Structure formats: structure tokens, C-alpha cells
Length: 299
Image 1 (cartoon, rainbow, N blue to C red):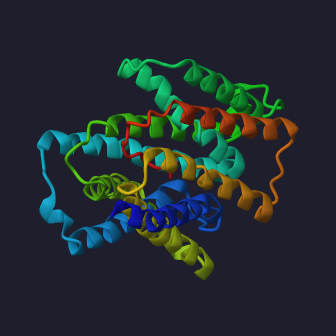
Image 2: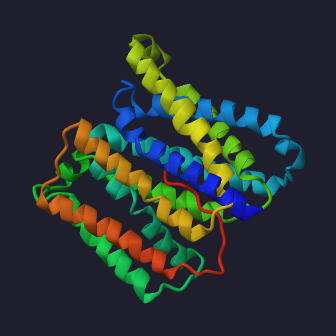
């Protein structure tokens, strides 16, 4: 049964990763600050996923435990911060640099996981970290001599986004009974409540028709629909295949940035991008074939 569903699940995962990859490019056309954009994303995701959750009957099968709900909300706080910093990075630097630095997150998960959960670091994991660290230095560009220049480059926001993705992943390990749908609904609903008091709603009145198309696409398609495709494919595909397909996300993001926004990384930045993704690829070698745990996507 699972073998028959695998090609469809793989197609859904590929589509979701390709769409995820265009979110940075699209965010530049919304004409909204990161906070307002994340608020729209949380609102649309909560509505879309809740409708599917109810219509599918999944809500009847949920097992609610107070401690796990609190754990989920803490994880949700980290997720919302992760989104805020990522969209801030898109606004301050090129999508290519932001997405490359952001994808240091899996390496940070390895590092912090070894500290918090006493997970043993393999030789390959250590090499991966060194390669990714070298890539980050190269991609930051040698012209950034001062800390102030580093802050204004936008890289700091991408690094913070990666750090909070790491926190999201590590805290997510404690969620065992709630379904992925219920978990995400709780987290995005928390995001709506967290951000609502700080949203400048008057900014929405100045948007053009094209801005509104970009905003609604980011909320409904890039968050609501894509998460449905992603969650539907998670239960069928093996972890190793998911880990490889996730690479489609940054590849699409970088390709769109080069083709449509005119960004052209210099030689050192290009080497940095290659180093970061090579380091990420090395982490796949350590995958244990006996492990079949679901992973969370970066966007």
C-alpha cells in the first residue's frame, strides 16, 4: 500500500519544496515588513489547516495532554521567531545569502543536540560543521570588516533564523501524541495571538493589487496548501529521501534570485554557498537506515 502511495507522496513533496523555495522571492513583492507578513502567514495557515483538520476527521483522533500542549506552544514561539528573522533577512540582504546562511540550521541542530541530549558527534558531523563554518565566513564577504557592517548586511537575521529553527527542531522532539496538523495549528494560532498587538494594520491599506496577490499567495499557497502537501507526504516517504528533497528549496530560491533579481555572488560568496551545501550533504551520510523519524522543513 505504501509502495503505491510513494510516487504520489514524492510528487507532493517535490511540489511543496519548489513552492517553499520561491517564498523569499515572493516576499520582496508584498511591500510588507516581516512582522506583518508573518502575521498573514500564521493567520492563513491556521484557517487552512484547521478546515482540513476538521473535514478530515483528524481532530476526533487527537490525544491531548496538558504538558505536551505547553511544550508545543514553546516550540511554536521559537517557530514564529524563526519566521520573523527569516523574512527580516530577506528584506535586508539577497535571498541567496539569506537562504544559504539559514540552511546552516541542520548543522546547528547537530551541535546543540550533542550538548543538550548528549548525542555523540561523529567525525563526519564535525567535518560538516567545519565546512559550513568556513562557508559562512566566505559568504559574509571579505568587505565586512566591522561588526556594524556585519549587522547591516542582513546575515545576522539569517543566523538568528537558523538558530531559532534549531530551537524549534530540538523542542519539537518532545511532541509525540499530537498529530503534525494539530501541532502546526496550535503553533500558528499562537503566532496570530503573539503578533496581533504589534501589527500595523494601516500598512495593508497601502498595498497594490500585485502586493495583495503576493501577500495572499504567501499566506494561502506557501503556508496553508504547501503544509497540507508536506504533511500528507511525510508519513509515506523515508527520512533519507526527505532529507535529499529538502535541497530543492534552497536551489529554487537561489535560482530565482539570480534569474529575476539580478543577484550575482562574487567568487568568495559562490565558494561559501558551495561549502555550506556540501557540509549539509555530508550530514546525510550519518543517517541511520533504521531511523524513520519525521523531520520539520526549514520554511
